Image 1 (cartoon, rainbow, N blue to C red):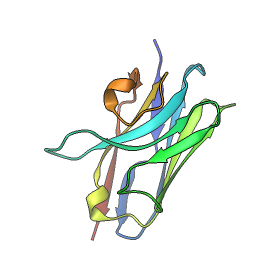
Image 2: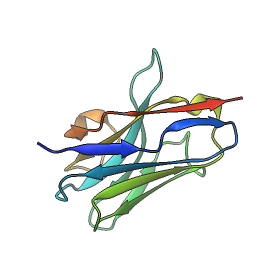
Image 3: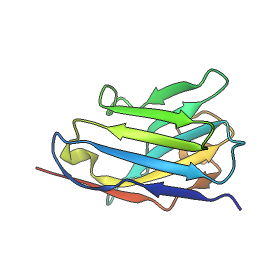
Image 4: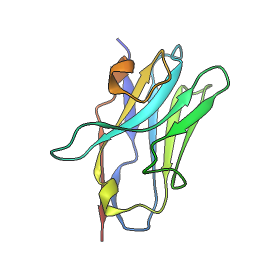
Amino acid sequence: QVQLVESGGGLVQAGGSLRLSCAASERTFTSMGWFRQAPGKDREFVATAGGSAGSTYYADSVKGRFTISRDYAKNTVYLQMNSLKPEDTAVYYCAVGYHVAGTPGAYDYWGQGTQVTVSL
């Protein structure tokens, strides 16, 4: 069974930064990405990294503020979040799969989630 271990969530003031990490127990996945889910809302795509060219993709709401990166040697994906806003508050989930996509259904394994709270 594939395991994903996330870390790095927490409480930060608006304008601050956080860095999330997610380590996978296997290295066979094409894509490693991040989704988030706020209370009462659907899970939404944040960013993903993968494919043969190591391409990265972002949701419009985080472009220019968040950066996804992937360490293939460590089977780890990172999400550097800068200029955080209260609307970024959510549980953030790491996900891995065999397709580079922005929909939750395209990913095969999920982390347990880590809470990110941005205060005013």
